[in-house]
Amino acid sequence: MLDTLQALFLQSDFDPMGGMKLVHLEDFLGLIIRLSVHMLFVMVLVRGIYYPIAKRKDFLFTYLLFSVTIFLMCFMLESVKLQMGFALGLFAVFGIIRYRTDAIPIKEMTYLFVVIGMSVMNALINKKISLIELSFANLVIIGTTYGLEKVWLLRHEAQKIIVYENIDLIKVGREEEMKADIEARTGIKVNRFEIGKIDFLRDTALIKIYFFEDEQGNQMDDTFSGNINA
Image (cartoon, rainbow, N blue to C red):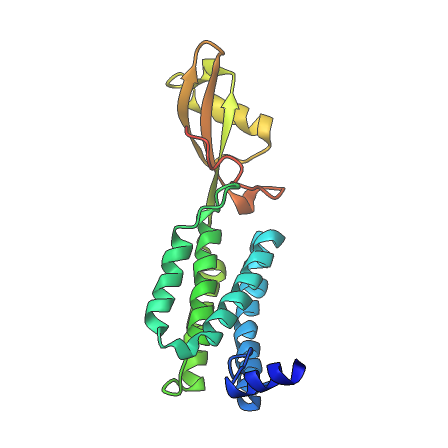
């Protein structure tokens, strides 16, 4: 019986691995080198520039895993010859992703798109692109990010929505009193605020406050109130 089955498999060219070889040494070494170069640039971006400012380990975790996963996925599918369409498809898919948790702040979303772009770019390069050109492209992205974060000091104005019950201060002409009261209660140095929905039945109002994160003594997170409609 076993001899019969073995003969049938040999005659039908049975190959459960689809002709896959154990290793393509040249391609494997190329994968290791390109992944190492890619992760070097990504680490400089997210660990050297983003993390010291934001101090968000959750987003650092996300960026690194996204970077590795997308790079490997693009590299493995490079031979499919869908390079441009595949890259645009990735941006379209991640562009419509809405996590069921709190909304992602716009700055963190921007870093996510940059990481995706670098991963696709570094994975889908071909022989027409030299190492110097690839390094220059990555350094332009990193340099621009560093310039915006450190050199030109573009400050990120975060926001938070609070429920405010001292509605006597929402009257016109008492803005400074209201701002001082909010700062005293929250400990946040408020840059400006907007008055939203007012509930006279409960004597409360929704107030959207704006503040600069680097002026706060503690780590402020503007994602908690992202889904509240003021």
